[in-house]
Length: 173
Image 1: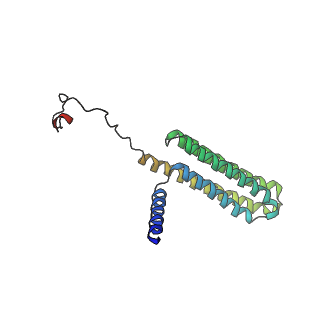
Image 2: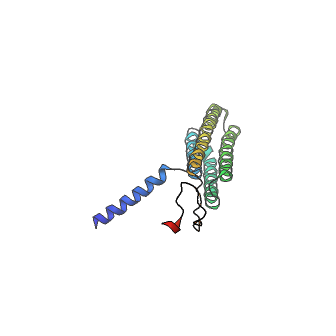
Image 3: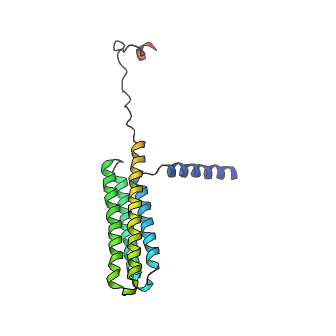
């Protein structure tokens, strides 16, 4: 019984290891969205928690909506340039909206928190640049995995259609 459990556990471990070695742009984008929301939450924790609670809730709802949109895009579109552009656009607009929302806190919070908000916005803008660069790199990895394969012919060539140096086909095997 334990051997069977070990085999199943090994299989799942092997399966998960192979999927994490190659990450496409959709999974990278989902990780970026979740990480960006987590980082913004950390930066907002440094400010007044009572004033930022509503914003945190709104950002969490926005993240859920964006992740579901990315998952839907991954299911409906094959890997390619069109899917990548849409993915990039979704992530870019999400991070931009989040930065704008944090900038909007400057008007609602007391003036003493302005330096903290400006520092948070600066940190989020730097993080956005880094993460969008990471998303572009994931597309390069995705392109490397998309090798066009020659289709297998449905019928063999005629024995009279031969190319010098090649085997004549099924008729002479």
